[in-house]
Image (cartoon, rainbow, N blue to C red; front, top):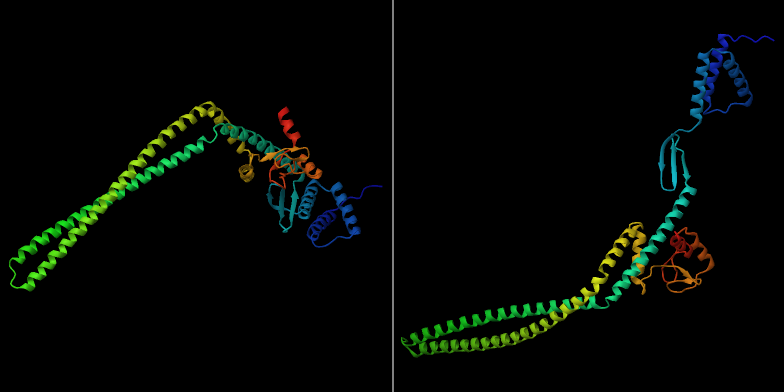
Length: 350
């Protein structure tokens, strides 16, 4: 049977049908029968229509597909999720479950190993400092005691200076009283009656009392100065003894540190390098646990199904969680961090 030739009117009708489908695809669901008819026409047009018409139809179909697929206008990538927002206001959240869990597992292992290695270094530093014994504390106590003696001597000298100022003031008062007495005695020689004479006599008597009070105060201040000078002398002698003891203690400590100073410096440098591999929050918890623990252990292994720090019993399920290295697990009794023995052994083997 010969093929039917497609007329220009049929081509125009096919293009109009495709455009109409593009406009109504958002709001109206097309009946299956109608779609089948249009699909047939479209196929016929594509088969027999000129190339220009075919390109126009393909462009229309691309527009239809673009309208059907929601356009992503904003993408936000977080640590564990990706958020995609479309033009219609639809938000789609995709979780990074597999990759994130694997990365987290590696991170937890690295953190635990870094903490364990840091614990070993800190233990070595503690052992080195233990050799010094109480010498550093004794030296600090002696230094504080010497500083206290120096402060006391300075205070005594300030008090002596104030007492000397008071003695000078009392001497000035005495001189003023003597000058007043001499003046009143001269005035007595020129009095006209007994009343004036008695008044001047009382003034002279008052000035003599002022002189006596000044002498009494002066003697008191001089006695206090003598006492404080004795105290200064005694304190200086004690200070001299303390300084001699302090020099001996420092020399002893210097001899001890000469053997371990280099090793301690190297350990401290390694410890700082390991601290940089652990986040600040976990590092703060590690240092707090070390400070509160009597043996300085903040991270321990499980020994005979018990905590290596406080020897509390650890349930099997909790031991299994520790072996998985999925999260940081601490002892419920003492708060120490757990690390799996196999993880430590694998590091030692490497």
